[in-house]
Length: 284
Image (cartoon, rainbow, N blue to C red; front, side, top):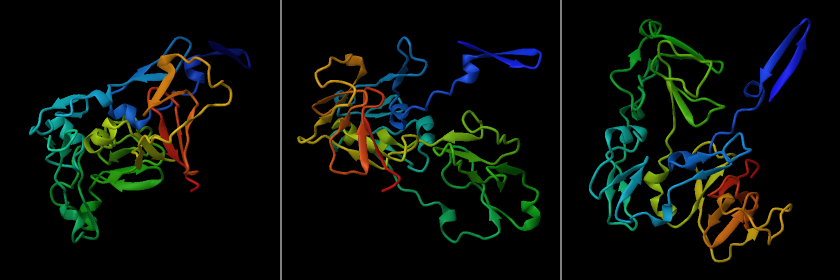
């Protein structure tokens, strides 16, 4: 639609794209699992996603970032850079299902960190690279970045407040007007497939803190005693489009339905099919 505004003697025509709110970001697990957003007729934003069949995957292989790994093989260079703080990841089929085994990492700057120094970080690397820049004279030669009211120097990491699942690096030419799409910022990879393949295979769903924008804090797995709490505006026997349903264990849920829970701080709902997910309240 179009909106006509009067401004003195001028007519201002605004398209719907300029007046409508942007679509919400997809839940983090949909992004990392490679789920495809679907906008059915009449919907401006995705109202469901098409996801890989997580419970039917080959249990002898590992899956990450849309790629399939045979036992004994390591992550590709591109995939490894996504989880740079979990180095040397290899597919291990000694577990059921197969899962990745990664090394632990201790960055040198974690030990005996020097004061009055700026450690130099680069995109795609967990630890600082090269020697830190030390001394007031040398630090003042580094480029400055101003971001969310704070001053940073070239090489430093910056963590946005609003886009909390991104990290940015102060570099020459840094544009502080945007985070998403900024070449000096990258989305945090939670390593959901890397660390939670067994839970995914069991049909468990992620639990987020406050909202679903960043990494899960835990998982909710199906139990025999689980029941569906039907959303009030829909009858329990009303037929729902199968594409607009969530599956959790033996349960089938419509949009808005919840999973019974003894924990009042955690709410698990079918918000955007096909997977329900849980939110732990910030108030608890």
